[in-house]
Length: 368
Image 1 (cartoon, rainbow, N blue to C red):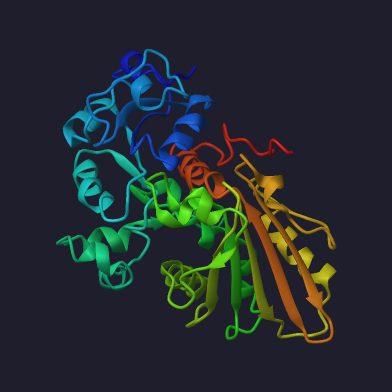
Image 2 (cartoon, rainbow, N blue to C red):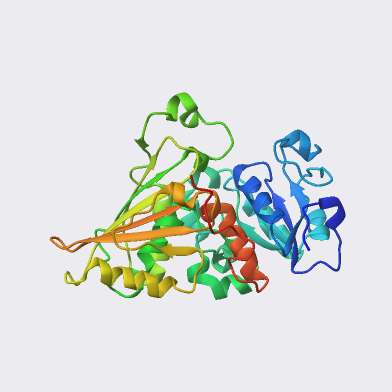
């Protein structure tokens, strides 16, 4: 039994695993989270939070997505959230979650943060990478940064299950790390010279209007951005270093492409053994992800398309080997708003209550 009605579900003692507050409910991440929870058999939405829309009925904020009983959007008051909810999904701009999460944790609410506020174990590192946000804040939560669990379920599942605070990865790191990590873990590739070329749709920029995301700007055009020092570079390196057990510096270049949703990441690395074939390397991916339904490994010669992952909490992986140079080419396609954001957040929620990660999540795209 599940419901998305805030009014009817708040305080219901007989409900199963948990009541979930969605903060930042009207943004793209929040909307996708609500859609997934509305279909979920073991969670209900118990609180809708949003500062700009606080005090309004949901129908006046997002009339295109009706919710039962037309709940009220409220300001993110920690006491109110704790009184109604067991979990909170924070879909907020970078910097804001760090102000709310400590208050919720003190009140016993377990948190999944979709922003970058707790993705780095070092607060100093976060402050360097997110200097603009850090300049406006006086963060003193080094302990939370060090204790937060990086929410990549296929690699940190047991830790996520026990976590009080989960930092869901960014969409670019998710798509790039999933094909890369198995080869770093087994020492099959050189740790230097790794290059990631990734492309995403405009929804990755969020719902707040931005000039570069305007139709007249983004349509019929492909453009790189953040070519050196993009924020996600160090996030990818941190997880890659954890798995490889050594320092890694890689090149990551994102591109904006004229589509709404979807992300394709192509990773280039050099094999230590140039005799390995594409079939050998595909077997590596299959072995690592054989028990992970949210990842599919495609046959050799079949390369993923973003449309194949649209609306699904699924990463589609493929690879090829250039036998002339020993170069390994890894490819990954995800829906940036689902497996790259909201779906991964719900996948973490599932693990936090002891459910299989894929519970209640769409694993097939709506292709075409």
